[in-house]
Length: 390
Image (cartoon, rainbow, N blue to C red):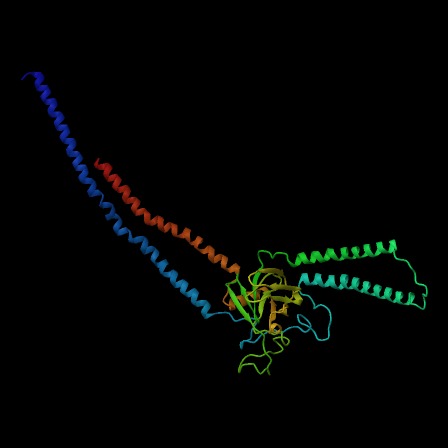
């Protein structure tokens, strides 16, 4: 064998040896990778329970806190500030306010700005105009009777037209109507002005023959109001509650009153379940029909605390006269106590509770990051091992 053949032989052996070493290195790397792969779960296995162990005390405390919060209202439900311990009404009506007065005429004293405007319009615009027109027509009629009687006027006048008089009796009534129209339309617009967003919503539902009420923004408080019977009424059930002077006048006292806060806008939504009724409180200058299948809305603001009475003002059946309406206006703080006593919740108190989960979420994020850190470290360690093997 020549020199060149020996060199070729050595080159071939070197190539075969290199290929063998490369193949052996690949097999060793393949065997090292499976061994390293299980090492990641092995590293995660003991650390996986760590996040659970950290979160479980909070999770266990949360139901305990919820149970404590649930039990607290049940154990300390506030008393109704408008009722006595025996369930009778604590506050009675003010004489001459919010109720009819025997042998009196005129509009009841108003306790809303709308009612005050309407009473002023009635007393100082309508009544004077009505009085002047009535007196003028009476004087004109008396003068005509005396001046143009047969004895004083044996030859009657044959005048059939007078242009000046015809212009006067056309223009003057138009001017009178214009004077009345402006405040009248303004008052009507104020009466049906939509309530603001912070208004307390009350839904009044007419039934034959009682009223039911709902406070949809205060935890769905529901109230049913029936007329209180007289003490000597033969239909009064044994042991049943009867009317007293604190409850209100005869035929106007109800067993349950609706409560509204003073100085706060009230949105009243009226409807009915059977026939047409009408919800009316004269001291508020409010009268709105309650029609089945329809929602009618009005608003008002009560300026003075007190008890105010009204009744259904639409003929609705045999016991139409026995559907009283009683509203008790109280200070806002007392109203909040009343809502709590009825099992409701003020809208302002519900907003922080709704925002609580968002506040807890950032606190939970570090725990999640801590739980993920061991897995990330294990992955980095595996990558480093693979690189070292290569």
